[in-house]
Image 1 (cartoon, rainbow, N blue to C red):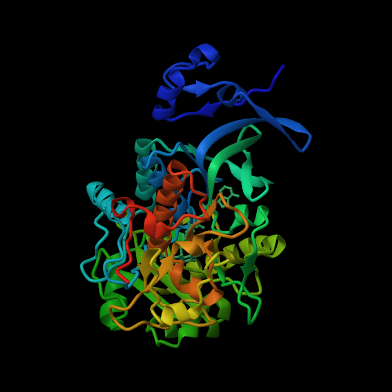
Image 2 (cartoon, rainbow, N blue to C red):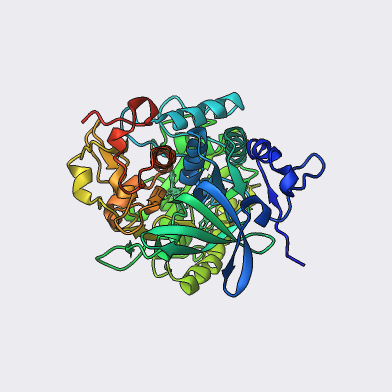
Length: 493
Ligand SMILES: Cc1cc2nc3c(=O)[nH]c(=O)nc-3n(C[C@H](O)[C@H](O)[C@H](O)COP(=O)(O)OP(=O)(O)OC[C@H]3O[C@@H](n4cnc5c(N)ncnc54)[C@H](O)[C@@H]3O)c2cc1C
């Protein structure tokens, strides 16, 4: 008997499929299912000596982080039959699975692209005000963000495949013909006209033979990994009174419920909590690595819970070596426990606190980056480069944790990111999106923040749909030639 492969489908696809029920599609109950994927596409392929089912889409997005989700929603809204493949069970990538919070401020004027504005409005509609009245950070709520992503995908007709891992790609000439995925049921192949690599790790691009870089060319190190977590039971008022009033720390400009504490010894910015953490090293309660970097933000809609931007794991652990990465998890968890213990014991407001959530995705700031048609470098930042095919603008500082920090542009300054940094000469139907686009280690340290990755994804989705509709290769497409009303960003030069 043939093995079967059941695929949950969107309402939009269900309507399409209604016309082919006679061809063997089985719909059961109120939850629509398609049995035997072969019957959708009428095909299966041989992979690793196994016959595996094939599904067909216009656009296949690998990775449902901030960038991939934006790409999927925008591809689908622009008419492409879209699949979004995510190895976790929530969309939002590091921002949700990795407990990375909040979206940083791009520091670039008018940088919000339409999808980003919509995300903020949807947060507001659910009672989460993302604007603290002072900074331009987007204070969200990870669980509500995941819900919003689900809703946006559902409304746009994106087929989200959760708990599905991209394991390989098949190529013919200069095209990716299919990605091989591992679903909860087994292997399957996804064919598409255009593929978007939003894995953060350029996994799809690398598997298809695209040139890449990893780490800092001067040291070979990746940016440090972090194992983020949340702590509940925090008396935020008591904490505020201690840090903002008693210690007179003026780092955080916003007021409760939008409150942040921070210290980072390598930055030598003399945060008031540096001495507090240094005392832990003196007493033997903390290691120097644990004391080096600590930051925590209140989470809107989760009273008494803080998002912990730490521990920062020493750079001897690599974001691109599977053995080292795995050891970093164990090492990082010990650091996390120790930091939490120290805060509970000594920091006013944390007396009754506890670890309420650990990230389910280790925080990789930087891993692999593609070499694309345009390679962004540090000069693009300092020269405030502009490009006719720009897909967004940003000015977040060069935040390379220890290697180079706090390189700031003058107020109002920004640089742009060209569509050519998303495409390669090697593969004609591939667009790369998010933190793994074509950029040097130092430039990536600026462009990697979530709002910028989201705007890149938004453009990638629009470009993919447009390229298909107009019979253009993704890597021949000129973003500047897409009609203005369809573009999410237009360079003003
Ligand atoms: C510790 C840390 C702190 C940070 N702080 C901030 C901050 O305060 N504010 C801010 O704006 N940004 C911050 N950033 C940066 C930001 O979170 C990331 O750069 C951003 O999330 C990148 O988005 P992305 O979509 O490119 O990739 P990711 O967020 O990494 O998402 C990639 C997605 O692809 C999925 N995936 C990967 N491989 C596969 C596969 N083979 N098959 C299926 N799915 C796959 C993953 O599960 C994930 O959902 C921080 C990053 C780190 C690590």
